[in-house]
Amino acid sequence: MRKVTLVVFEGGRPLSEAEDLVVSVRKAVVLDNLNKFTGLPELDRVLLYTTYEDLASKAARIGTKIEVELVPARGQFRFGEHIVKVVKEHALEAVLYMGGASGSLLAAGEVAAVARGLAAADALVVANNVFSSDIVGFTPAAAVLGLSGDLLASDNALAMSLARVLPVASMDETVGALFDVDTPTDVMVLGLHPDVGPCARAAIGNLDLEPAWGRLLQARDTLSSYLSEIALIGRVNPSAVGYVNRHLKCRTRVFSEERGMKALGRQHRKEVVSLIGCLIEQVGFAAFVTALGKVADAAFMDSRVLFQHLGLMLSARDRFSSDLMRPADIQNRVARDFTRSVLDAAIPVVLGGHCLVSGGLRALVDSAVRRQKTGNGLVLRQDSLL
Image 1 (cartoon, rainbow, N blue to C red):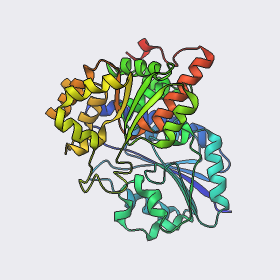
Image 2 (cartoon, one colour):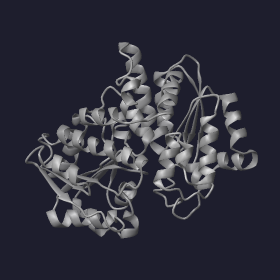
Image 3 (cartoon, rainbow, N blue to C red):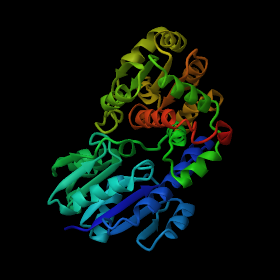
Image 4 (cartoon, rainbow, N blue to C red):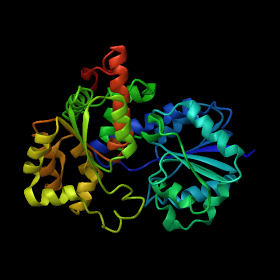
């Protein structure tokens, strides 16, 4: 039986208010996860690597099993080099890696089950999404040492890279396994879920998320309305659509494209092509939004595919400001015009990244169903987020 070590990376250099908003919640998610998972007997050690001094200080006080290393926030972070260094320096036997944004809704029992599987296996890689991973378990840990840096450009490619040398298994497709917090929209979705952790709940309660928050509430309510028409656009996960169909009685209009665009290197090579993008180039943003309102009562759109198709090399500030529906804060003119058109839409349109139309969609469905069953309303009152 190999000893399993939980390794968590969380860091960055936020350069705008919109980025700070997301980072504040990501830090809280890490603390919630450390509180949930540190006491599991299936985990031998917990290693946290972070660029944030405040997170490092708070994490170090959670328990003796946690080892914290403060990483300088300078230069470009090279994921592959760091994960290899961690495995070498600590002579790790089996690793359960989590990006700091992942696992906010993951149950302790799910982590324990993965750890038991890694401890018992001769060779295995298990991930929440093999094609775009942020939770990856692998044994033996030394398997990562033989991979080239190109294959380990980011944690999204970790599982796919390890699959070259190890047998592959997938985690159960639960809300907890597939939901992470990368964007302001993910923050809002987390705030609506009854299982949001106490640290994240407190962090979200201090944020100003308007006007996007109001539109998310409208879209969530429309999603749970009988025979409503819901448009899903972007890197839509087919299993997420199945989850909607199993639990709600709405009708879905789905356009899924460019799944795996980051993990497959298509974004880096500027090969992303979107049929929705081609349509917008023909008719313009306003006409597209008008047409969307004719076929749907609400829409959830992974805008990153469109941005890549249009060749927009947007900063995190611009992407996040678009998610927040704040065109005045967007520096790129094209992204600003797009966001303004969406803001003026006759129907609620929610913008976000990949998680919105994958794990985020599942989380929204789950929170809507549980809200209907209990009649308790929102986990957080609307005024608590203003």
